[in-house]
Length: 75
Image (cartoon, rainbow, N blue to C red; front, top):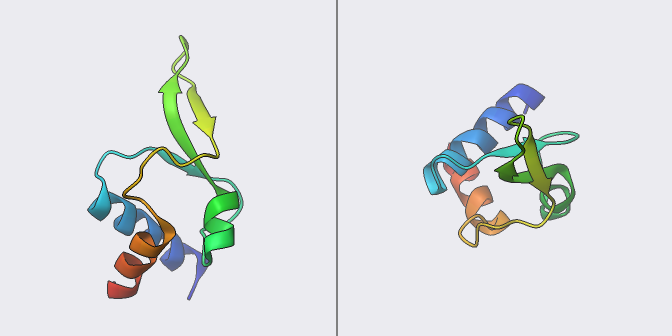
């Protein structure tokens, strides 16, 4: 699977599970739980200049790697 296809599947899975979720993929779209935990940063707020405040800790309990992977596999 190409990187672009993987990113699209990841984005669609996130949107399906929790619309409006903001995140940044830091290296490459995750293909494993380890990559999910290390390559995704979550936007948890904005600064006064509208810059995202990021965390590696996933604040969305419904967005587990298992749930996201299941959605990706459907696509």
